[in-house]
Structure formats: structure tokens, C-alpha cells
Image 1 (spheres, rainbow, N blue to C red):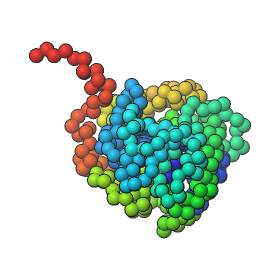
Image 2 (tube, rainbow, N blue to C red):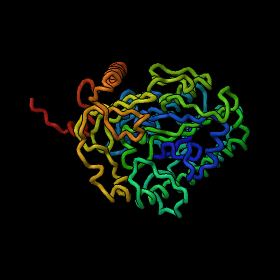
Image 3 (tube, rainbow, N blue to C red):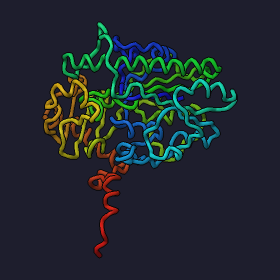
Image 4 (tube, one colour):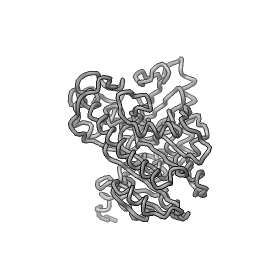
Length: 403
């Protein structure tokens, strides 16, 4: 059972955010393993979700941008549903998906609203193996009007202090509580049908908070994700917090290993329980073409920007929020550097670019080499030049033949 939501990063009580009310997800973490340094392969919905479902980087699975009409990126790798279906599992999708315009190709036997989870679990024979993907959207913008501000409201340090941030964070915390209640109903149904003791349950989100300087950036607030795994029948422990680096690329390989299903060729992730020295992430398209790649180790972040753009992209729905509207110029300055290097121990908010400094020259060279190596090993199309979008290819179909 893979449970996802949108746009909340690690903004949960079990991750230390005291003002959030998320008792059901907290209980899930108390019964399983919480990954404290988990990151997405991309800071946007479709590419990240495509990696979660395929164990492949966005530039390898075909989804380098949004997968809905007008953007039209299309999944080109086998989805988890197809893999598990081929292994004899009954496969169910609850809620929406955002990795293809052709959901019938993903491999789900049936699709349902999220409210149908209890009914489906009750109707499936107990001996049948199931793959369930449950995608909640309670936490996606636009947010409902905020309720009363929690007295201990936590506003992330990368947001400007003030009433605008308090308003938006109060609103998003309200949606997280709604999500938590929905997740609680699913987990209760799993218990009620007697499946909980043997089920592998994963909860995660697609990327960081939908706030300025978070979503759509390769800074930690854009890439950080909650990731909780519970498997009572497995030997993974309960109430465990793992501090090693993890990527959402690793979720599918972990599920395949746990269920004894052979992984198809081309999977690039590894088990979540194998340590990583670094994670890699990328952005190519979101609202516009803005290619960048990064490597993050436990201490450093190295970003290479491949085009001129604003310092950070702020998606349209976030621009409607009070924080952006209070000071648009804060996020609309020109991008000053091709290369960015941050010491995450001394500069966790990634505000002081060390690229070019003599004192960090060796670290910069090592991370630069590792990033180019990763791009080469994974056949990153950026190495061949600018990446063409589906819209460009569609537009060129109208070009007359003048030969």
C-alpha cells in the first residue's frame, strides 16, 4: 500500500513540527521506520511521482515535466502497477494520478475514488495479493480559508516572517490534519480486514511545501519528503528513525524486494535500507524550461543551472498566495550563478553560495565531477543540448515541407 499526498515535504508532527496535528501518521511512524533525510528526484509533482512509481530518474522515465494537457509529458517506463500486476497482484488506484495522459496503460486493474478504499479492502479475498496506490489531494493548493492560528505555529525559516506566512502556514496545516484523518481511515480499514500484520505500507509526499523558494527549486525545502515505511512481518523495526540519505527512487525497489517480485531491468534505485553517500535530483520543465541538476551529500549541496531564469521559479498557484503577493520582487531577481554550492551544516537555508571560494575549491571540484559522472551514466539528454518539450515537437508538426 503506497499512500501519497501533495506539497507538504516533511511538515508533520512526527518530523518535529509541533504545531501540526497528524496523529495517524505519527502512529504509523511509531510502528515503522521514519526516514529523516529522504528526498525526491524532482521538486515537482509529475517527475517525482514518476520516479516513485518506476525507480528511474525523470530524464530516464520520460516525465521531465507536467503530465497533463498542455504540457503532455508521458511515462515511458514500466509503472509499479504493471510490474505487480504481472506478478499476480490485483492492482487498484484510488484518487488521481499525474504521470500520464493514458492511465489505462499504467497497469491498474481498477480505479476508484479515495473514499472507496474501505469497500475494496473488504471485498477482496484475504488470500489475494494486492498493490494499492492511494493518492490524496487534500493538501494541494488552493487552500481553504485558514482557521485559528495555532499558538505554536511553525513557519519555515526560508519564508519571510509576517502575517502572510502565518496565514498560509495555518491554512496548509489545516489541510494536513484533513489528510491525516483520511489516511487514518485507510489504515483502520487495513486493520479491520486483517491485512495490516503482513502489509507493507509506505506513506510519502511528492516534494516539498508549495511555498516560494521550496517547490520547483533544488534547495532542500523543494526536495525534502516525508517517508514512512511500516512492515510488521519484516525485520525493519518499529519506532525507528533513520538519518541516512534516501531517495524516493528507492521506494519501488524496496517494495519489490519485500514482496519477492523480480525487479525489471533498468531500475536505478536501491533498497531504502542500503546507505547512500549522496542523492541526485533534477528539474527540466515546470511552468517553463528551467533545466538544473544537483547532487546532495550529508553536508553539501551542489547545483548546476543550465539556463538563464529568475533566481527561483514560483508556480502560478503559489503566486496567488499571500506570501508571494506581499513582495513579488523578492523572488523575481535574475539568477546570478551557473553553479551553486552550499555548506548545509553552517548554512541550512542555502543562502550563501560558496561556489568559486578558495576554501571550498576541493569540495566543489569533487561534487562537480560526481554530478557530470551521474549525468553521463544515466544518459541525461542535457548532455546533447537543450531538451525539446512535447509542445515544441507538436508545434513543429505544422512546419511545411519546403524541400
